[in-house]
Length: 236
Length: 236
Image 1: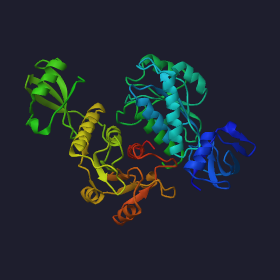
Image 2: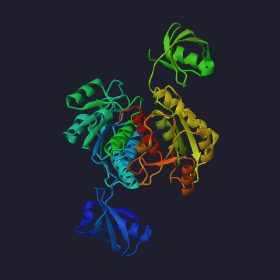
Image 3: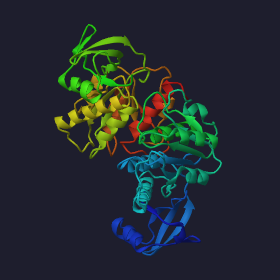
Image 4: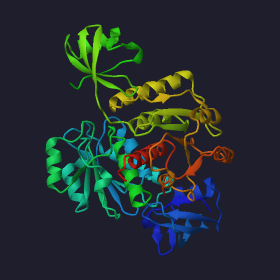
């Protein structure tokens, strides 16, 4: 039983799942499942169930499946929007590496003003990437917003600001060992302004380095997520 | 003095550097340097020098500059060529993260047969990315080749084969703590065949995992390089 279907939480009533016409088509015509066949239902909100197709339009949820694909605590990525289609790549790869929320930031040095359609596209990329990576959570991609607005939204969790200055301590030397909700902030091409860094430090954020090498803005979040994940899952 | 010029080792005789017409144009017309001005000369083979422009066609090397951007030991990436332009992305990002050699592999499940022009393009991408990242070494991109040919070229160094099977030990639990030359092998979309894995294990390669999440073939090398770099530089 490796066939999977993503359902929306509002489709569930008790154990019953009312399927959309697209889902019915997918299960019946693409996967060729008949009444009584089993599949995995995923809600993108942390749950996988063993499920059974009852009629072409209705399925029933069975036991919850234990899957451990998620990081032990959620990471929010606050990301200065890169030029070109760099954000597409960041959203896709950060989703593979376990990010839970992405806040696209319009900072002082951001050169892009994305349309609402662009932000919806990022959400679609994240949802697709989460399904391909067998994630249990679909990351939430927020509308493009200012640094101050995004920081207010993430609240009191520890905040690590990646900064390529060489004298800054390494991310892993600052990360607390127990997994806990964490915000990682990465600037656009050109980095943070001095004013932004000062303001972030005033808000309790810590500047951190990602090592000796100079990473482009689209590569930095991947290094950060890979390192935090390995630390939290105690491979280090 | 932050202006930099990449020179080829064969341009150096003693301390003198014979500049090409393009380099003369770049220093004189683009950077607007005059005789007596200083710049940084980089050979892409581990050296940065303080240099002085003597005439429009000639410069002199001064002291060697101590720069520590390179990983403490070289990593060779043996990479099943991904579909589309995925290899461009891998070459660029792996260069940022410190790779020293890349062997593009034609494996059982590789669906691409790259032209020699394509391989030259990868070398150009690596050289540009190394300059942008202020690397001291330009990575060498080898011609596309079979797994057996590439494995013979890397010789006796430890070989880690990334494998998404969940029961495989994590890369960092297998990596020896002291930095030493290392080969990391990553399959194309669809992964390694059972026959390839068996053959690699017969050659002394170890299967390793990159964590709980399912990474695409273009993302896996970045996670591997970020983790090995952090381990070797003792941030963990």
